[in-house]
Image 1 (spheres, rainbow, N blue to C red):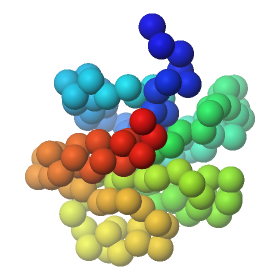
Image 2 (image 1 turned 180 degrees about the horizontal axis):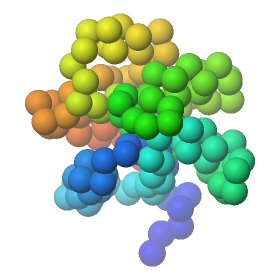
Image 3 (image 1 turned 90 degrees about the vertical axis):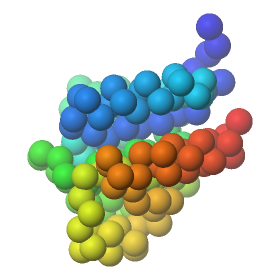
Image 4 (image 1 turned 45 degrees about the vertical axis):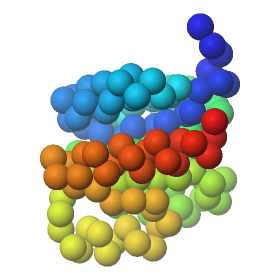
Length: 139
């Protein structure tokens, strides 16, 4: 088995187990070399990125974050506000993958340098095409 350094490091911030399994299945289906960490909400994701509250710091940092908007404790927009306020995370690409088709949510994430906004169940193929394209930068 290859070391973690040969993989594309992805942080999936998603509270729905079915969506997590769907994303994992697609990565396997396309044989993408992904080292996937999973956080259930924005708060847990930040704890993983900083290595606080009994979470081991993610090293290397993820190259890609796949982010849901609607989550408990800390939603995706609050997570983006926190993440993008710390310049050590500027190089991380972010893709929004959410059930929200709300224009206010789309507008809210524009200022946070996201690489795409995709609505679950309607844009699944477009989402994975974008993931694969972004991951090619790291292969």
